[in-house]
Length: 124
Image (cartoon, rainbow, N blue to C red; front, side, top):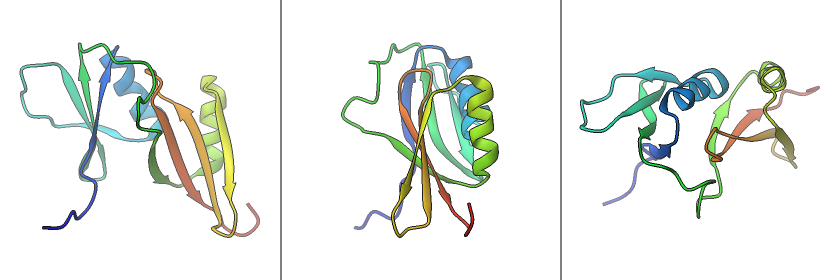
C-alpha cells in the first residue's frame, strides 16, 4: 500500500455561505456537486477534484490548530495581490531562494492559513 496523492481537506466553518464565497472568489475554487449528507456543507473543486470540503453548523476552533497551513499552486500573482488588496484581506509575501517561487499567505474567514505558490518568470 502506498499513498498516491492528497485527496482533500475538511474545514468546520462558522458561516458556510461566507466560506464558499471566500474560497470561490479569493482562492479560485469552484463550488460543485456534493453527496446528500445529513449535515450542511459544500465541496469546492480545483479542476475535476473536490479538494476542499466545508462543513457548516460545527463551530470551528479559531485558526488551523496543529495544521500550520494549506497550500495551492496558482498563477496570476499580480491579479491575486490586487484582489486581496481590494477585499482588504491582510496577506504576506515570501520569496523562496533559488526556487523562483513567491508564496502569498492569508487567512480564510475562520482563521485557516492559506498559501498560494506562484512560479516566477524572470523579471517578476
